[in-house]
Amino acid sequence: MKAVNLINFEGPRSWKLVSHSTTNLQPDEVRVKVKAASLNYRDLMVSRGLYNPQLPLPAVPISDAAGEVIEVGAAVSDLVVGDRVATTFFQDWIEGPLKPVYFQGALGGEAPGVLAQEIVLKSRGLIRFPDHLSFHEASTLPCAALTAWNALFELGSLQPNQTVLIQGTGGVSLFALQFAKLAGARVIATTSGDEKAELLREMGATAVVNYKKNPRWGHSVQELTAGVGVDLVVEVGGAGTLEQSLQAIATGGQISAIGVLTGLDALTPLFPLLVRQVKMQGVFVGSKAMFERMNSAIEFHRLRPLVDRVFPLDEAAEALEYLASGSHRGKVVIEVG
Ligand SMILES: NC(=O)c1ccc[n+]([C@@H]2O[C@H](COP(=O)([O-])OP(=O)(O)OC[C@H]3O[C@@H](n4cnc5c(N)ncnc54)[C@H](OP(=O)(O)O)[C@@H]3O)[C@@H](O)[C@H]2O)c1
Image 1 (cartoon, rainbow, N blue to C red):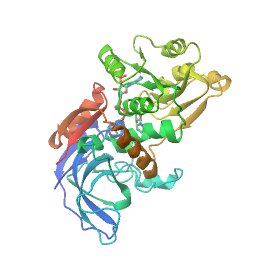
Image 2 (image 1 turned 90 degrees about the vertical axis):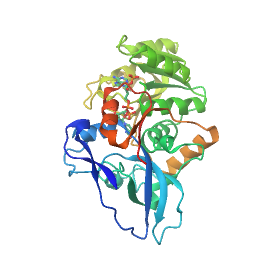
Image 3 (image 1 turned 120 degrees about the vertical axis):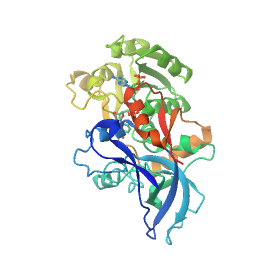
Image 4 (image 1 turned 180 degrees about the vertical axis):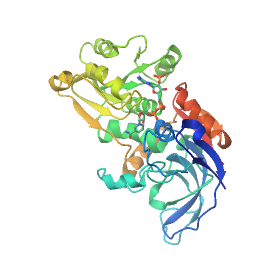
């Protein structure tokens, strides 16, 4: 079978399609024929050596895939051959709060990834997904969707009529927009260009601010909320956006710190954080129990993820290059089988 290997840390060109042998199943394991995989910004960071420079190479990259169960180990009782499943990002985080021990089971990071025609995982590291979703759509759920869900409803407590700020049109942000709309919240978005602004409005954003034309967009967001500010910021920008997020937030609001698109090391004045009693909440994907709750909501509302482009497996490196360009909207998917 074929798999992608990360062979060095030179970015997308470090992904090579190679032949891999298959392994025998342990009693608690399941073999999945992967149909689709989706990319996250983290995969780009891993390929550039920015995520874990000590990662032993070669390594199979990425965390997110969906496929069909083709074989189950003797002790597996929760899945059967033919089930349509997605991977869970943290293989061992089933429920309850996050513990550092779970990091070792993070697919495509500390643990081997899933960009392969066949994968073998413990059954507890797989989850069935709603029937109305295609494999392409389901492959977008494990990291981006679950992170947005966790930020809004698990570690966040978003209520109808509250206002959420999302940043840009990437995977996490568009899921946050979709979920916030389902919950009856109002969404204000930032983005880099007019076409993307149009998409955000079509998807339900009530106001969009261009952060390139308006670097002090936090003040514009205050104006758009009549000086009140937003209740929750889905912070994916990091070092370069935190200062404006602190301008945009309401008194008592929550900043869900998720991403580092503009860098890791923030030099941000803390005064607004203190006087507005802002809650800073780190978010790291989510547990399988959260994934199940998210799937229930996706199923009930028949929500469909936004898949921007689908690449064949032998163009996986081009797919990562496309993600790196930042021209995508929503999710970039790889058709695996
Ligand atoms: N903590 C976690 O568990 C977790 C989970 C998932 C992702 N993340 C992190 O969250 C971030 C987003 O991940 P993703 O996979 O959603 O990325 P993505 O799909 O690659 O999204 C990138 C988009 O972000 C927008 N963007 C870039 N620079 C920006 C800026 N200065 N201000 C506002 N928006 C900007 C751009 O959209 P526009 O052109 O529309 O602005 C760009 O297309 C990454 O840093 C990733 O590592 C963290």
